[in-house]
Length: 90
Image 1: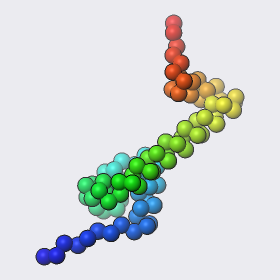
Image 2 (image 1 turned 30 degrees about the vertical axis):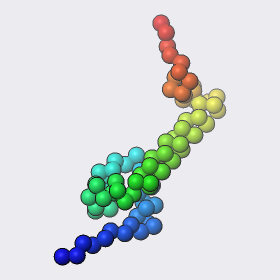
Image 3 (image 1 turned 90 degrees about the vertical axis):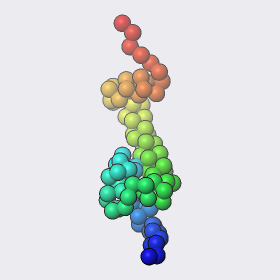
Image 4 (image 1 turned 60 degrees about the vertical axis):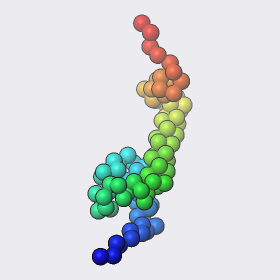
C-alpha cells in the first residue's frame, strides 16, 4: 500500500502560526488540523516557533505600552519586577 504524503497548505501554515501565537497547545493545534502531534511538530516546526515568538512579542509590547503610559500603576509595577529585576524587600 502506498504511503500518502501530507503536504500542508499555506492556509494550514497560517492557522498554525496564529494558534501558536495565542498560546494554543500543540496538542490542541494538532486536533484542530486533525493530524497526529508528531506530524504537526515535524511539518510545522517553523510556524509553531514563529507563532509563539510573535505572540510573546505582541504581549510584551502591549505590557510595555501600558507600563510606560503612566496610567496603569499595576502594569508599571509588574513590568519593573518582571523585566527589570526589581524585588520587594521588607
